[in-house]
Length: 257
Image 1 (cartoon, rainbow, N blue to C red):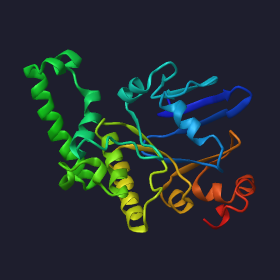
Image 2: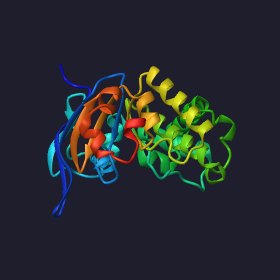
Image 3: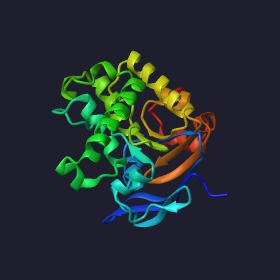
Image 4: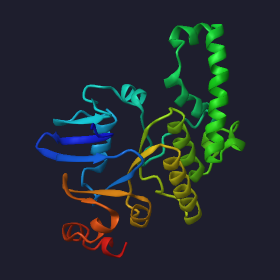
């Protein structure tokens, strides 16, 4: 049986620096899986490889049995993998609704010519996109902000907006890069509830974060990287009690998480 998602001995070198070194792991359907590690462990590089922004020097990334090697970011997204970023990436001069509609454009069928000429088919599709985008905004609690400029949202709501745009692509897997970074405690709690609900709705989550409380409480399994190599993989409790992980995090509080 093919794995839902897996990396196979993935390596990425930048000149003489090996940022990711032969990393393999799998994610099963219905999981929240986390990648953790000290600063410089290779977590963001791994995400960049998965979503097509970087090509691995060696190895493979497979999604539902298909290799992602050679695919662009947009092609990976069309297959059902979307992403959020540690530094929120939204279009501040556009409305909240327009930001989410951009995510829906991945799924349009009329193409560039239809959009440029404002053909009837494109107008009908835009109306459908708007309806779907409003439904997504309602799912994350931002429907009342639809007509506001995205740059005017407080930071916590900008994080939700970026996640809403990812949801709008109808993904099967979302890569979450530090989803609670910069959030206050109330916003963190709301984000955890939202992520848990997305998992119940059938969206799989692969997450990088430094918040150990979040990782240990929400993840089904955890992969630990250190200096580009995988040093542990298992349930949160297994990882928390792993001696190699404790040594890698010495002074960073993993044993108290």
